[in-house]
Picture 1: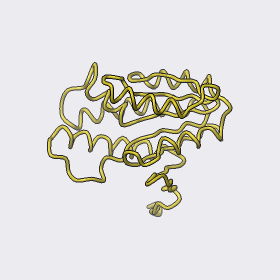
Picture 2 (picture 1 turned 120 degrees about the horizontal axis):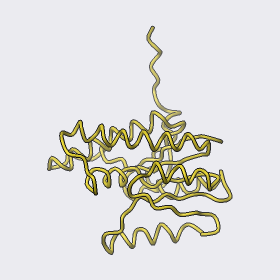
Picture 3 (picture 1 turned 90 degrees about the vertical axis):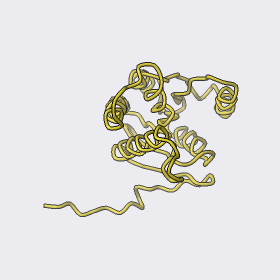
Picture 4 (picture 1 turned 135 degrees about the vertical axis):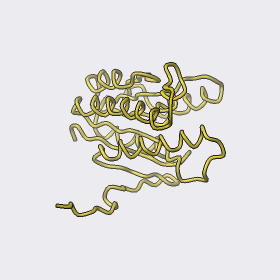
Length: 192
């Protein structure tokens, strides 16, 4: 489906990436995988290796986008039949805590991140190809103990809502099972 945007969310090891990979493969013989991870330690290197082992090189074109993801997205939608962006919350971490990290209040940081995500959504839509975004659901647990973790959780929740609002479909993964949330979501009648 040209131009379709999909959001896949869930907790750690919920099956969201595997579901997203299968979903994207239905739309293109050659699919783009946009990875947002910066490999900073052995544990992250192993996670990346496991993800890559699932994806045959004959079907996937890999892109790296720890920053400036909208520019990478613009290129990926030109080169592939469908695009998988994995993942939004890791990309958000790069924006918040990496090079050129915004300063100021939580609201100011959220505005910065949401503006970057808006550019990413625009680039995805402009490509007129199916694009699947993977994200983590970080707000379903206990309230984090420290201010930085609470700020991250709040901004991740706002970003997930932003992308979900723009998406045509939203899937929530639990124990390897994906539920179509937009089909189940309550819709308010439009007010006049």
